[in-house]
Length: 130
Image (cartoon, rainbow, N blue to C red; front, side):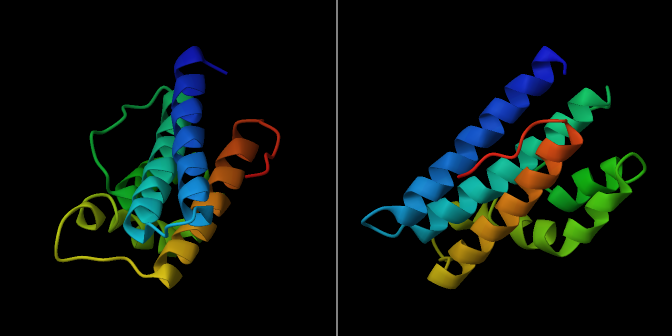
């Protein structure tokens, strides 16, 4: 694996761990959980692009990243619904007027975990617990 890919994976893991810790913390911070889940999925997808020597667009649109990866990793298409769901949390969750629910935070964490597992498998990395 390329060093730059490892950096993307490391950042993605940090976001995933932040989401897990926030979800399990004393104070429920649903917006922050959802944001970190989106960030984790985004960085895992960008790690795959890096490993393929593809241009990494400056976007938070996970569906766009999926579209770019689809010719190389068609199995990722099964994550489209979850990636569309997570994309909304890239910006909206950080500003007034939008509040994530406990259910949305739980669902975001589930989708982020699935994306994480799939990307780690594609990259030949062992499955990790939260």
